[in-house]
Length: 455
Image 1 (cartoon, rainbow, N blue to C red):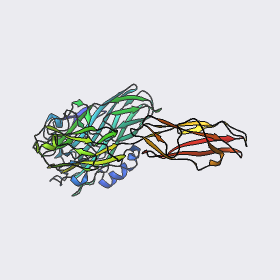
Image 2: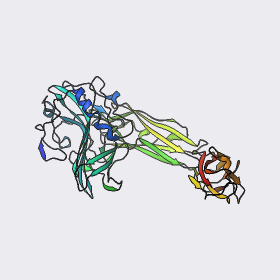
Image 3: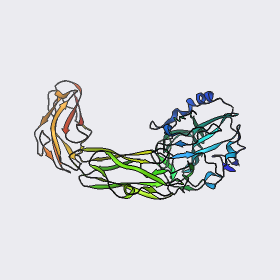
Image 4: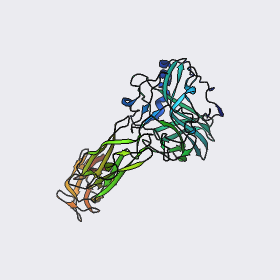
């Protein structure tokens, strides 16, 4: 089998040697501790409660991601597995195999980078198996500096010494009856045109889905300017034996609406056997319902087939609704959950701060008008307005042209009310306070910082 190592020429898969192959597991983990500090991402990890038992070689038979997709080592000899077979992991000194790999070529105005994410099995010493998560970035840029790579699992600093980028971050997993991986990978990226039984077509680059934060790569120059972007990845990943439920979304947001809305989550069976639904339901807010159509009316899903779980939000008295779409099936994960949210609320919009011109002590400024908007979908009710904290005594509310923001005021969607405030310092120095407008909005109380200087 031939496999391209990112940033290097193509070389034989089994003949590739690693400089760290003789490290013990403990030494390997210690050596990587400092190297992983530049990765920033949400706290997440592979779903270790659904990791398969160890096979005779000492590797987990499968790993399951947070979305419920389970992968075995990709070693069936197909092009989707880059031609890899079980012989590639049989060499207990230098063997390797991939549960999952996503590679991309990232072009930019300053050069090209090769990016690799992987969940890989190998040997840390002869006969000592281990699995690790990898991020590798290699290439040459025309200018030195520290660049930033934004990717589906967070953000990583890329030092370019003399323009050269050569970064590898490996996070080892703990192999046991329930193997533990604590690296940044939470969900496996998969091709939007993944064939049955796989997450991608091996060397074929396509758009992808499944990313926790995004489904592309963005490269930023040291000054923060975007200089490169791609959404094309080549994916390696073999679905573990049995059915596999691939969901089109991990969360559904109906937004802020006073009208009935419908959304759906597509479920595709990527496995090679039938996917059976034991139960599909919505748990939580009663304003969000599962329609008795699509997946809810389907007992089984053939390999490669897709159905939709159709959801309806009917606004009620609740300003915020939260529920879970729960799918019980015959996959390894057994249960999939999708967060569902909706809002029917007023939304306060006001300036973050207002600065008054400097004044002499003992004089009063002209009143400033501060507008408070309702950008929501239902009327906003004002429950109170006050000057709070700091130097509240150096500011005064004044009368003005209405409609005024005052207790009991009602502001229609798209409407505005006003508060008039003057700067009235009685001592020298910088004066600050907050204007608090309390409402029935989800963001209430809204605070505007008031600042003035007395001389």
